[in-house]
Image (tube, rainbow over all chains, first blue to last red; front, top):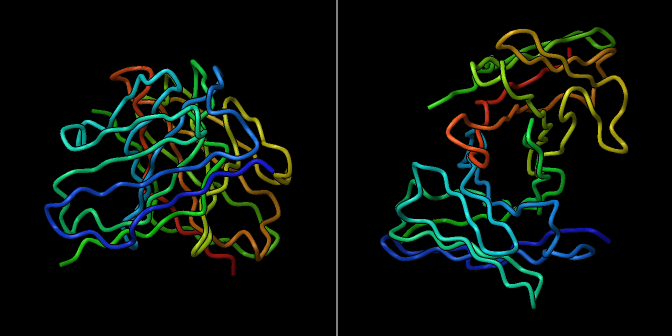
Length: 122
Length: 109
């Protein structure tokens, strides 16, 4: 069954690095037709795109987070990962991993993980 | 940078038709995609491209575009359609940057 599943710590201390992994099941992360993305949602707020990564390693980041974010892909494990450094309480959010179909005329995320709540607190 | 603007809240009577809009200059060039999100759930893709629905999405959901405004139309709204709706599109800074609208809370009366 095609699905994405986030995993990682639910609690991170301020100034430390948040790390999450998304495991892809039922599809190959080496697809040439898809990017793999992280999107977050702070409590009561809108969705915010964090970044997208291609299986070859090319990554694209939200300019507002670019200095603190790194995305990577592990094709051997069919996983991709997020690292967000120097976190503050403002980074408390539900983090979703998602699959993005490649298109020249639109962006769509057609498959989502269930989301992982990460709280930044000492 | 570009922005996508949505009305914070919209209401519709059960069985009636409602339009949820998303405004942004980037929409003159690129199509919006639309998502439905219910409390505690991940977003669900409803519409992408010119007016395409993924498998399993009811045909009461449709999309359109006019100028800088994209619209999600729900024809014959059902109680289960009460949810938050988000639009998204590409950013004009490049092929890979992504924007989301602020979301619209739909209430079905």
